[in-house]
Image (cartoon, rainbow, N blue to C red):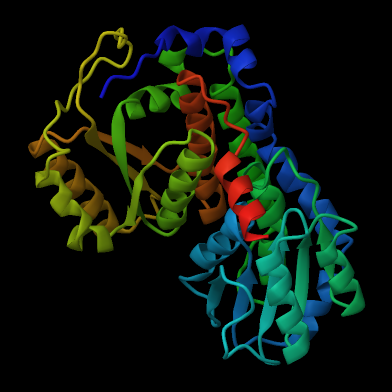
Length: 377
């Protein structure tokens, strides 16, 4: 597969700006501000009333696309210790078992997502406790007002996928109020500081050889990424990577998580897309390349000090390299799980935008999604 690209564009700030007319890079840089603003909005939303509910039987987070990822974040953080399950609903309505003993958190960046509104209506009808998160003065906010349910208004950053932290922060605060998590203000601030650090190291005027976001974009070019998550938040980071590759870079990926991927996806290392050289010059001139599409294993290791997980990551690297499959390993940084997730997602978001700009693709429009919505309407 030949991709006619110019690597030098990544270090040309004016060229990057011209290829990013809606300023997706600037939206990505807003992650820390989103956390802090969302904490302020959440403090004024009346979520303290959730403490009086007692422990729920289950928590259902209803959301689609860039809004639904907030539920995945909660599920990954809550899984190790929560005494109630977290279920992410990506369908209209609610599962049949949801009732008055459960809590439904409806998340819609626009406040008008039809599937999420259907879930909200079902929650009200069945008597489940309800929390809404989304745009102010929207169909979702009006439903929550009518149901006397707490509602956290969110200011969208260009697109729902660029508003992940604005949406996930209220979900996590609500879960803390319900007793599913123990996240302090310091934990949120640590995640915000980590995102600020990534914004500094990945800023557009920082050259590719010292910019991890640009380096990752170069490694992905011309490859089919097989993205595996490992550790507490590795799975949700891998899912985020696949979604961001599709929406920002319009680029496909295969997404999995360890240990499950060791029972199926690993066999692709012996297939027709494997066998490329494991070493590569990231900064070579690719204009005249005639290389076939090949796999690249991308490991997202949330380093939660689990030795078995670390061993699986190491063995994955070895097996791939022995079969000529190039490997990129990203390891989380930070102490708490929220900060570690931020360290992975922050880099992922920058890399997928840089990959789009490298290919002269506008990262903001999602024309096929718009076309689907029009036809289904």
